[in-house]
Every structure is written in C-alpha cells, then in structure tokens.
Length: 269
Image 1 (cartoon, rainbow, N blue to C red):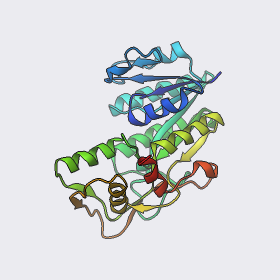
Image 2: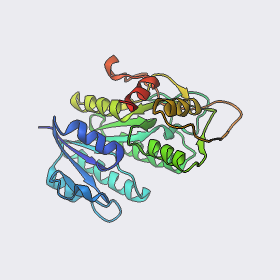
Image 3: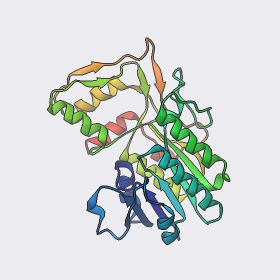
C-alpha cells in the first residue's frame, strides 16, 4: 500500500499536494506554526530545528516521503541526511522539491534535467547540496523535482502582489528575466502522476514556453482584474537572463503539460 508523508504539508505547495493526494492514497503531513492542523489525525507537529523526523517516519513507515519543507538551512541538511540513510534500508523513496535556482549562475539559456548545476545564491547552493546527497542513492530511491516560480490564487507571490496594490507600494518586476512558471493546480497533478507511476530521476515541472517576468506580472494583474500597480523595474544586466527549467529527457504526457497562459487561466478559475 502506498503511504505518503509530506514534510511541510502546511505550506502553500505541500498543502496543495496533500489535498490532491488524500482522496486517493494514505497521506500524512507535518505542520509547524499553523495550529489549524492540531486536531487533524493525519498531521504531525514538526519543528525542523528542534525535532527529529525519525520519530514520525518510524511511526508511519511511509513508502514515499515528499520533502516540501522550508526553514533553517543547516537543519534541512541534517534532516535530509537522515532521510537518505533511512531509504537505503527501507521500502521507501524520497521526492525532493528543488528549484530553478540550482542553475542561477547560468543566465544565457534555459536549463534541462541533466545540465550541470551551479548557483550564486545561498538558496540555490542549499538545493544543490541536498540534490547531490540524494543522487548518491540508487536512482529508484529518489526523484528530484525542480520548480520555477509557482503561482496560485492563495500563493505567497499573488498575496504579496495584492498587498503592494492595497498599500500603493511599488512592485518589483524584472524586464530582462526570462522564465517559465507553473500553477499549484497543474503542479499537484504532475506530482500525483509521478507518484502513481513510481517515476524516479530528475523532472523539470513548468510551463513549456517562456515569458519575461514583467510581461507575466502585467498579464496576471489583467487576468485577476486588479488595479494597475506601480512597477519598479529592476535591471540586473543589460541583456536577457534566463531562469527557466525545461524538460528534455523526462517529458510528462501532453495532458499534464501547460503553457504560461494556462497558468494564468488556472488563477482565475
């Protein structure tokens, strides 16, 4: 029987995945500060800095562990070291939600699954370090899912945009940033497929096309029928720079793929 543990199930992506999976498979999750999960028997309180994930894992004996956690970087590394040791000797695999930032030192082109990773950011280097830990395991024991910017009606990015509008604060846009995007709606379907098919390896989940950050935000504002914000254009170079993860070796079926326009449509459903 498939039993899924989502570490970080109270967060935006983790909770969207929990809602997608819970009607189909035996699904559990962890939460930290959100007390609305206290009485949910499928949720466990977990502080990555103070608690050991060993207690929860030993009790549940999951067959799939999805890592969607945020928090202290050193604590995250320690937790993933334990997970790597655990899956070596148990019928279990880890699905790690990584980021396009593992490629943020490369700006001249989009990145594919088996391109070399290199990051100038602390966040990107954290993701690379955990990815490398997992890739030392047998491939059937892990899946690395690299994500671009994720948007949803209740996503932190959309909430931040609306907050800026309400308070007449200039919203930063990056006219030279070429990216792809994904909605929580499509992302959770894609992850569900990966779990159902027991797929392993590296997956790039995002729109199949690219868009400039400034253009996407403008179209998002129009789609949500928000008042036009004050934009603060931020130029980090004189040329287009790419932060996009595209699939080449591990493409999902057509019905699970999407364009950035599909992402916008998902946000106004």
